[in-house]
Amino acid sequence: MTYLQDRFVKLLRRSPLPNRQSPVYNAAIRQRHAAILGICALVDSYPYTVERWMPELLANILAEHAYDPVCLLTLLPVPVLLVLTIGFHKDTNFTNSAKMCK
Image 1 (tube, rainbow, N blue to C red):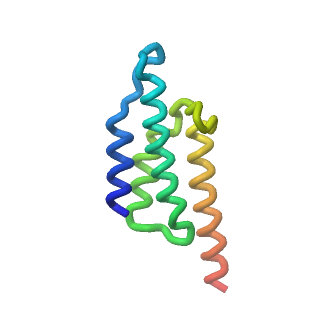
Image 2 (tube, rainbow, N blue to C red):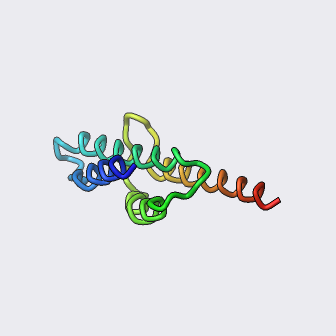
């Protein structure tokens, strides 16, 4: 898992957001969004547990990109994607912990 995590984080850090008029703007947006989708997939791959690496990834990496622009390939704004990922993870863990306490 650390291989994928490192790969997506490096991809995200290697793709700074250029000026909108730049010819590489669309490619940079796609690359950033691909990295964010990959990180969200890692978080979603463990819906019933909070892994050791997950809080740092959510709080430090994904939180920095909460206001990134929309990727035209998915038409899903990054803030909505993050809310869906974190909300699903929170709901699943809350439901499981309530069942386990009974």
